[in-house]
Image 1 (cartoon, rainbow, N blue to C red):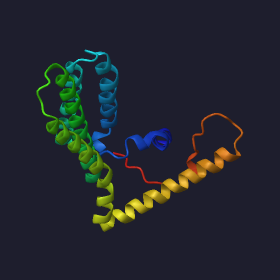
Image 2 (tube, helix red, strand yellow):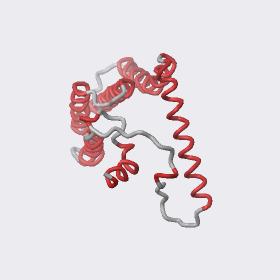
Image 3 (tube, rainbow, N blue to C red):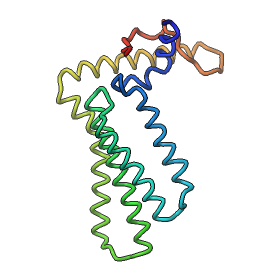
Length: 185
């Protein structure tokens, strides 16, 4: 219907990366982030239990994510999996640091290994899309088209905001944006 198309034009970007049957997964992602930032922040503030609770929550979501693989693109699934592993490693390191204050027995080299693991994981998350881009020639064209579309949308927004004296936030009209195909499932 016309109403559905209007909604998809405005917020479809939130659900577009996911497989049709997992359209709700962005809501789960936001729920996980809310739990980590809001609830865990106030729970056991400053204690090892705080890091442990965040680690359990993130590890649990990682297990669900690995079982479901909700993204339409395997590259996005891989990136998100590495991101969640990096978050788990970071939280584990935070747990080690809080426990170190209670039990200063661990050697500095053990912490150094974990530090380098975290740096590696986070760097790899950044490099993964670049590797995928150069590995798959079909993806090169897809990425090129998406970048061109993004560039044209940015230009439209810049032109509109430059000429608009209205300080209200700009929501582009559908005729301003090049036509993209939406999956209706």
